[in-house]
Picture 1 (tube, rainbow, N blue to C red):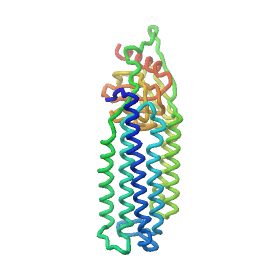
Picture 2: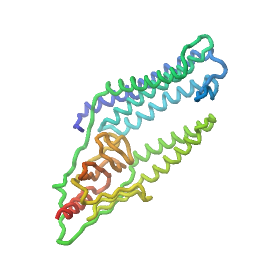
Picture 3: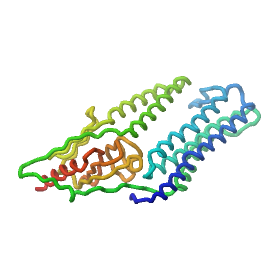
Length: 334
């Protein structure tokens, strides 16, 4: 359940987030780079960089491990933490805590895997490590250290809360008169920036995989194109409220939701913070089970179905839309 947190609580959560999600991961990456650099004179000119089902199938200079560890070790924590620190100044949520734990766990995974992969190929030592052991240690570090990162952070969650409920949404209509409301839900600037950065990172990764000549490059390219298409379909939605109920439809026609007035048990106008409550922008599912089209911070129409499922869509003038929908609900009861 969301609770109202003080400014001091948010500051404490931000400090823990910064330490767990950025400072410690960067330190882990620096330690890993230091080990690899120290071992460079003890490595052959080319070492294994990729293992397949039948054994090693990729080779490169040992210096590649240094650069990849440095770039990923710094880039991933920055990507996971800086947007949160920039956008979440007056609010906080469980997603922020989760992202810091993921950043720390991923940093541990990468550090163990890169250091382990290099250690097992040193010429002056006969290491008993195998790639299977390295992978097991890496994913073990991911889970254990990620959980530590989760629990050392304070459980701080803020919410702007409910603005109005069904009882306060009253629309005066003459006998036999019906009302309709039409609007749009469009992605806000923070969401567009976040999605653009994600797409750029994925595109750059795809190009890098092609440069390395990895056989999985085409799969990654297809995934990138599908993601771009999905984002294009979820930037703008048309919203219609009338006697039939609620319809939310992408401008390209899909995805869409049609909720009949007879299937609605409750209507509210709520304030939504996408990052704190839903973990980002777009088609989202919150930790508490709410699902919806969450494209910006601010007012949203929240509908609870008779089945108990909750749907949220961020729109301007949500109060008018909720009033029309509330009147439609009453019409189905009469």
